[in-house]
Image 1 (cartoon, rainbow, N blue to C red):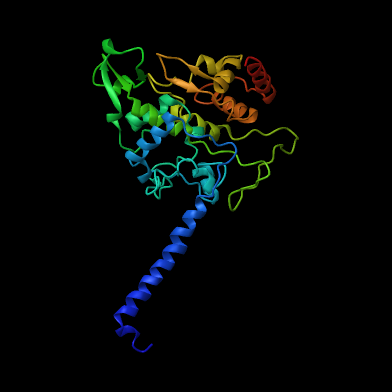
Image 2 (tube, rainbow, N blue to C red):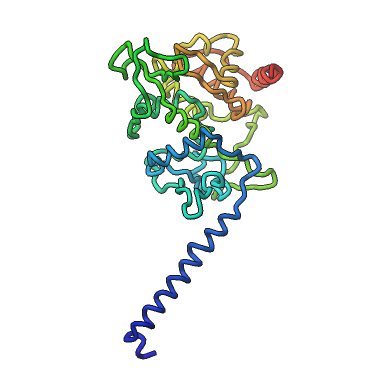
Length: 333
């Protein structure tokens, strides 16, 4: 053993053995273990369009600025309802062939927001298309680059029925006779982003953030029901399109400040729009509904925030009114 440092064969052999052992336990064994991961019951396979969008996401190197991993810390509950687990990546981590593994989408930088649950947070197609064409249209402070090569600029007279028009405000166009048309690549990429929804865990499973927040009380000292924070819900679900001050976006998303629908004595239309969405083309973009993602209490809180903010002064609605309208909407299906 005293000659160990002088025996080049022994040195090289020992180094090679150590390298092989470390590679086996650090890389190979975990890789094989990951292959045994199963998808969650509520997860769906990618459609052909979504799979193409995944490849475009990789081509454009979106993961250099966006993560897809909700860490097991309480501050990350902004990006998902629970911490990420290996099963979340089952369909996006399939092998391409014997030698190639699909690239990791977890990312390591949050220059932009995490996209784990972006299909839930922002489900509207037109918002995503506007964001890709020019992020400053919908998020004034955004530092994300534009992706104009994913769009075509056409004269209005040359627009075809099959073209998907993007409701870009006139101030972002050089000509009043030209329109922005989404390419198939842009539509595929948006389809992939819309598919990013954190799957529900099995009912018997309990995965919470560490440290977990204490649940808010549902009643106050007087015994009356307390609603969630309507302003916070609005900022997380509505402000990206209608803006924080309710001013909307000309040519894309209508204003809520001073809106006759918001201030209507009968709130049914407003509540149904939030639940079912609304298609106001060609004047505005298409709004996706929140019936499946927001509870009656959350919708009530958002409606009351909108009806009492930015100069609006309509009467508050109750949870029972929202429940009644939801029952009516469900009966139409």
